[in-house]
Length: 620
Image (cartoon, rainbow, N blue to C red; front, side):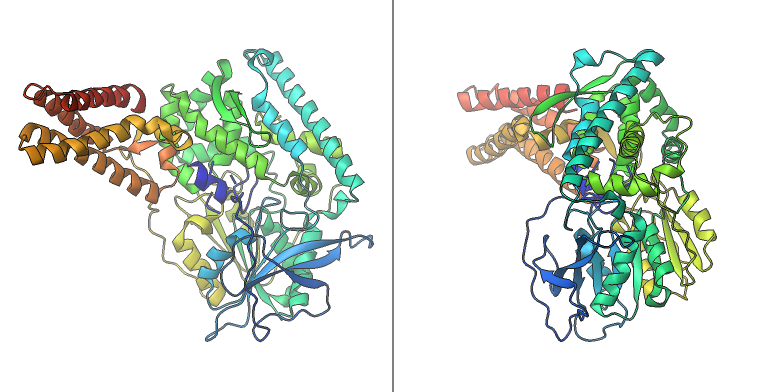
């Protein structure tokens, strides 16, 4: 669950390219990829660099063939020329043959999510077009990169404080004091980050939506393309609308996945949007009960600090869980298993919080907080009232940072492009709800909207059908596809999962699976030796044990292939029937002991009994 969540979070993020409970809750924080030098593209098919402000350099992440990377040098502030910054980009040139003229340009969301990490997916979507991914100024691959580890540490402090300093918040006064302490910590961390960036020469006023949109326009001119198709996700949908407004002659069409329109007031609606997603999943009331229970008696969850390293015990209240869930549900795989997850928590199985907390920490550590807050403090926070005050610590943290930075708000980008626009929304998206995306699309002159069942944020990452529809739209924006998408294969139905945190704990500490490995090995040895020696009871006992371990391995592998998050919540629902085979193996083994009391049979009997004790008391 975590590994996929972290990658989906990599492309867009409001609060991990395959989303872990990652990609603040950033739905698009990708895992780190080892740097690699991309193959050089032949000048005959490469875009032309016009004025010399773009230069090639090795790609910072693995890329498909025929991809080159570069930097575009642009003013940090176009309204006050002086210092320049470098915006990273990548170009995958289409293969020879039926190559279309107009390329696709893509930007990840966030703000601050990487764009290059999506190149492999985009190249498969558009094999006959050049694909350009452009990073946001100040992002991970651009220069300078506005990282703020101070902010990440302060956010982790919400969960990291020793239990002695965070006694149960049973009264409104204590809850208020706790929120005030968090706001003070965030403000102090924000000031340290701002002062350090200013000492490095960074002017935070240059990192806003209008400037990022101008970078995209400048890149088109620099690469020599006459026009291209825009593709934004999450917060970059605002950027792409700004591009369409500033450069109408250079835009053929626009794809807005998880449309976060200007005036959405994301912060004011955060609690409501989380409730809407949970209600759509059918777990609204149960989650409210879990939230109330944990607010009264917070859970203690062992986890690891992703910034400093080292283990610590997080103390998770119900409101903490709500903030974490708002980010986790941005991954469609997590949304698919949310009913089972919430059901387990409602039964008091707080060990299921571990993967959620681990993933949240990874997302917090991965985000480029300086860029994120520079954009949010100028283009989003000032347009929210924060009334009533949110109970989500991620929302209050952003406001505390912006209050401390005191960066002037930017004028919103209000664009109504005349080019065709395709807007996609995921049913369980907590950052850009489908309902608000639909109404925003209706306000655009030539836009169509489509909601995808089973999807969440960054629809194209998890829906092959959505990828096909996007490609068809780009090929012919005038023709609308009316065929609905089939139900997603990642959805879990009642009975699909037996809820347990054991598989996730084993993934973090493989030695915990030693009893299962010992049982599998003992069963195999018993099968072979029993067959060779003509001892039917022992052979059948070994056969049953081998069948059980094989069936469990096969069903678990199938579940993981269907939904990468499922094993963080449980094991296949067939585990119950399969367990009867293991019990039969142990009984037959004990029966064989009546005829063969030598130490190998005694050892096998002890291993089988020990395995069942481990299986029933810990694993299940």
